[in-house]
Length: 462
Image 1: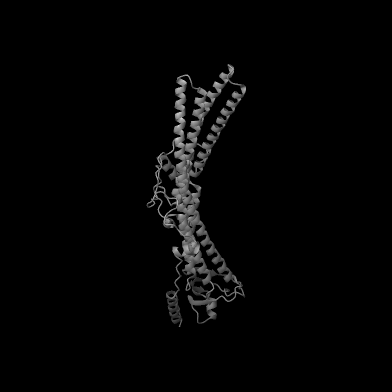
Image 2: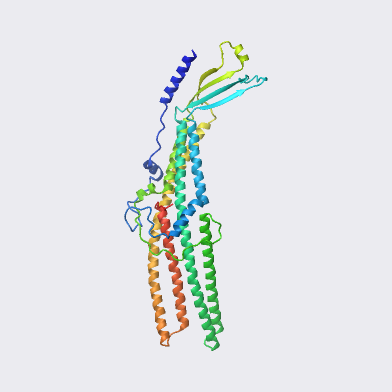
């Protein structure tokens, strides 16, 4: 009789397993875009783009010096944020395993020994037993939870990838900032020398009555301002170096070596199409994975309201004194039980859980829309900024040409005895000031390109 029951139980188990409901697929990208950004019309091309063509994720538009590539690799190994991202990925992998473990039977070994009895317990007997329990996922609740964990794990991996690219971009920008600061220091040092020469000329002219003490004080103030500017540039260099060292995982001693010149050539890069952005940016793909995870979490919450079916089996050896009382028992004993549990009244907990998960799904939809809009703003803003920075740089370059012409003309006047050396030095100071501004614009263009490259989904060799 027991064998018949066992066969019937196994047959029923097989039927239930085969008849388990397949979980519904999560909405695709088109459905997500419709839910999140139905009001948004994507243009065929970027509004402020000036170079057509397919985006090349590995093309930055200027050559990175070898030392930057070495620093990027060092940051990939030692940056604390990247180590945290890697730990989150490991945690997500473990969460997927934990969610899927409920699909399999549990197996436990237990025993009891002693003379005291527990009147209210069915375990008031001595023995050793091997017990297995399995809740059949007939409705797909566990598989939905596992799918949600899998989507969250994929999102964590994409977050880690985007973090790696972001840190690489941050290293490049920190190196550029330090290189600019070093060049600014050289320019300000030259300006300090020119201001000192001007002060000496004013003091000499005062002795013969050509200038007053007021003129001397004005020159002294100008010299001190240039020296203050030099101190500020030195502070900027130290800050940029420490920031770079933090990215590298080093002690912030402001000792990291950086270049003394900025990359000169900045080539335009094709930016691709707005419709391709979601496939290139890891953060957008991660936001989409979180939306799908929220969908599966809603499915799992809904299926929690359905009846659960469990199978339990055990094999054990009991104390012989119990077997004496039960003539039809003999060691080892075994059995198979099934259980059906349908929730009838839970105080509204299950409905509330569905409401919570539904609200979280709506939140993930809005978060995806926010991420997409931010990405679009970064790109269009970056493209527009590139245009204006280029226009400003070109205009300032022509200004420098004019200032150099004035210096040359003043030099000719000095040679024929009609020029003023103080005026020449003032023109040279004006030129140095414009050179500092141009250097700032050149670095802004480079940094803006790094930001645009990252916003478009660019990658670095890591």
